[in-house]
Length: 170
Image 1 (cartoon, rainbow, N blue to C red):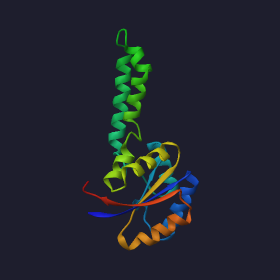
Image 2: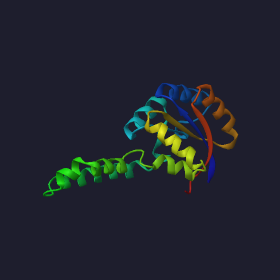
Image 3: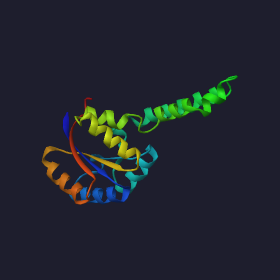
Image 4: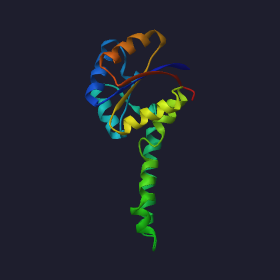
């Protein structure tokens, strides 16, 4: 079932927390608010502080990301013992690429936002801002809530405020 997704990008966690409090004051529930930041660990900590949920549902799943991180670590450990090339692979650009591919924002945020109807260029701008330290709040709203959600988010002075259409069957 599809529903509106209201997106607000904040310059820092403090501003995002102000918005989360405003959302809660208007009756928005914890499970309607997703927090997306630079890392899953930061998502979790911020979500706890804001009484929200980590952004794993708005991007690639948390278990998949953790499995990818573990796989990259195992691959790097194996590469270290490979005669001749192991240390080069483990310490070089390939290791960095593996870490990024397995990491938090390796295309997950932008691709998910694009699937929700955010134009490709805008989705990539949001992802880049998150990578640089901004915090994205994504609010899963029912149509009757959209005005109140936009007002609550706007009261916290976001850098950007966008709308999308979340399809749970995606």
